[in-house]
Image 1 (cartoon, helix red, strand yellow):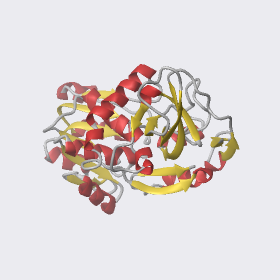
Image 2 (cartoon, one colour; image 1 turned 180 degrees about the vertical axis):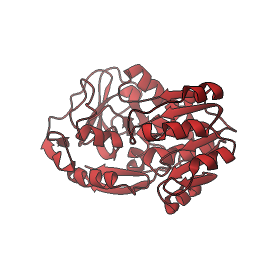
Image 3 (cartoon, helix red, strand yellow; image 1 turned 45 degrees about the vertical axis):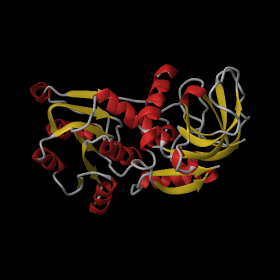
Image 4 (cartoon, rainbow, N blue to C red; image 1 turned 90 degrees about the vertical axis):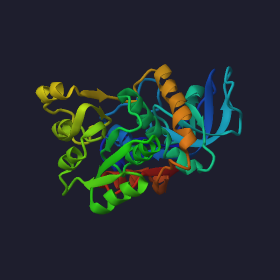
Length: 320
């Protein structure tokens, strides 16, 4: 089969087309003929040599795919050849076929395409896991950073569907306005607006979903309400920052870190099941992924270049 792998580490130019053996059927495993593969910031980190795939995962990037079931291994009870599915992977999505444990496979929700499904799985799992860890619920104020990114667009929609008061930040007034169109009550241009003051004027955030990391740590803590929870999803703004423990104690706040890829299979399976119970019923009437652009699998480097340049609204998807 054709794959796009990293020929070393570095810029987008290290992504090269290659051939690899078709994945083998094994007990409990589903083989998917990939129709679409999502592109995520984690893929950029892997390409740069800063986020190696777990032991046993394919060497090429890709954390989510959608397509049809090609084959099933012994013991697989739910899925049949020909089913339209999407899946959460530890790697290997940049390929014509993907092998995945059956517990990490989901049906493509009625009303959306495989391309949209490939842009939804990883973000939905990230958001559902973050909400569960933070105990986020109706009536609370949610602040979403990177509101027009792949995770941010889903977080805004899920939060609004749950009855949360959603605030967001984005780079530029036009992007902030699109966050409002997705369901945010208000959105702020992080380049020009004092978003901390804006959030505090609204009583503070009960839950913050943050993809920035160190650069926003102090500001996030200031923006939290008493008893607030900061969930760190990414480190686009650095991995090390100073934490004002006095403010943390005074607010009785919590800082929570979360990831998906490195978790044991049982935990990832539980998150996928959580998504099917809680997010899937919202699709497509209340939650729908935004697909900014699609690229042929062989042009994954162009997709990485676009994602790194900024300005993407939603997600990018590769088409094998």
